[in-house]
Image: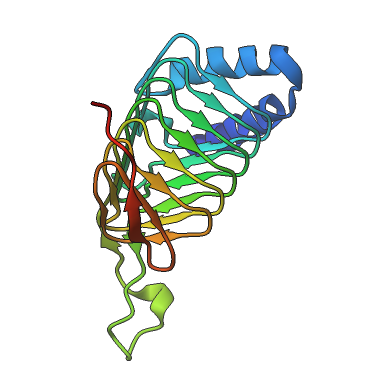
Length: 196
């Protein structure tokens, strides 16, 4: 009973904390979540109205900037690891409940991106889908990657270093290094020029 009350009070506090505007709000959220995350760089910036659950399973690098409306969860044995110099636009969902999400350094994530390494089971016809076990996996994003707006990364998505994923794509397999991929499901359409 006391644990439930304490959890609800923390949720109320975090809800109020999420409403603080401007730089002062970002500063207060930085101080609060640096104490809650498993590890966190000194200059993390989290915008208004975040929904962060199970922060003890989340590791965040330095110079990470998240715009408003971030959903960041790693419950049920899940884990999230975010590198340095990562920019996360508005309304991004990074939900690793039961699974694992790894994001490298110098990554840009466009608005409304969804990352989910867990699928709903649906093989059994004698049980509602809601009651079936999930299939757990990973989503891995390399370094120096651009994930454009409205991309969905599902279980098994692996995006190599220096790659670009076009807007509205769905990724459920491997995108090689230096590739530009787009579509549903995402396919390589060409490669970026490598430095000489």
